[in-house]
Length: 322
Image (cartoon, rainbow, N blue to C red; front, top):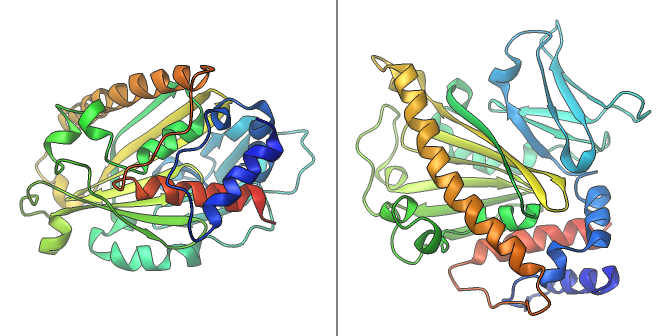
């Protein structure tokens, strides 16, 4: 398929009667679309760079390289965060924002602020006390698949039955039910029920909060999931058309860490994440191999996958609108 044909297909997701179909396989292998994404998506979108704890003292920095566009964020002596592009790029300084302990960067220095789009999410997450959370575990992996395959997978729980039968599927209801609410072109809220409510927590969570995983997805490739005393954040940064860096971590409130062996807790969380990530990685890398087949076609989306359609709409807005 040509770029024009792929963009026309994407535009269909912006219509009221958007097709309940996946993207064409070519969308995950097209070098023309990849070049367009580098400029129109990763050149002007808010990217979850990491947690503010990585920049806890002046002089510390973190670097992200979405689609080969390197951006470094550091904290100055005055406590302010600043971002810069790779040396020699002669580009204006990227935009940077810190929201409740999470650091976001946008290569577009004139980008619309992200904070207002997260206002409702922030109010709904007040009980989790995000700014007070502290990191207890982290990981960085590389998956050999197109970034959209990884991100759309994170927008639904339907795959848990196939990829996570002895892990995620044990704590979520059969069928992967998910309630989706689109906040803005940047933000989607995804609610997933647990099979059984979590036990009492150190945080003042309601019965509804203890029975639900609250996931906030920030387009194009960042998300954070709050449940119980924990928050898991993850960012899926494309490196090439078929390679994505998956980086994330687990945060907990200090009140939940009292009397805990932090080394044991870190090991437990990192081992658990490694198991689930491996299940996803193997499944998604297999999908990447299939989309390159000349026999591959678009597939019907399940009614349990409204989050995938929401992701496609955000992608379409970024690629086909000014």
